[in-house]
Amino acid sequence: MPNGDLFRTIRHGKTEVVTDTIERFTATGVALRSGRELPADIIVTATGLNLQLFGGATVSVDGQPVDLTRTMAYKGMMLSGLPNLAYTVGYTNASWTLKADLVSEFVCRLLNYMDANGFDTVVPEHPGPHVDERPLWSSPRLCAAVA
Image (cartoon, rainbow, N blue to C red; front, side):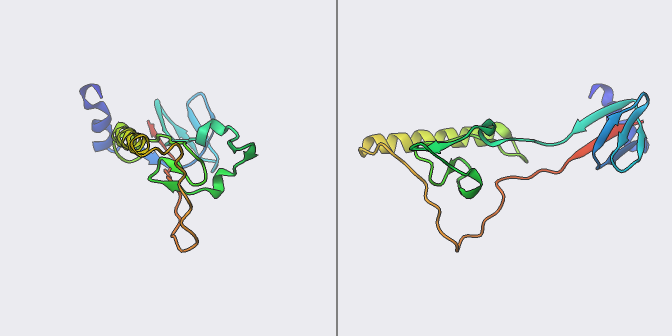
């Protein structure tokens, strides 16, 4: 922020954080789904991450489609029932590249172990119903408007 302008507007009470959905932009700001209209000189959208796993591609194993919603993530980098597949998604609340680097190192160690021990396939297995399942990640939606 050049000259700390944003922080100055926050300190002087000229900035408001609003959680809502933008219906449309108007000549003077934004109209929100709630019906409220926010006048704004600047609009900074901070909607978080809207990710679609594997870009929405159909994933299959031996010609059979896999319902990704029925899989479980192993270390946030592999999915149960999908052989030889690792993916990288960074942290959503810390350095993105830190997580990407950790996953890359783990996959390299795994590949070296497999090579040294004559394995050619790795498949994480779902541990069963006794496991507490949680979403892989979540993020709130925010819109900040400066008037």
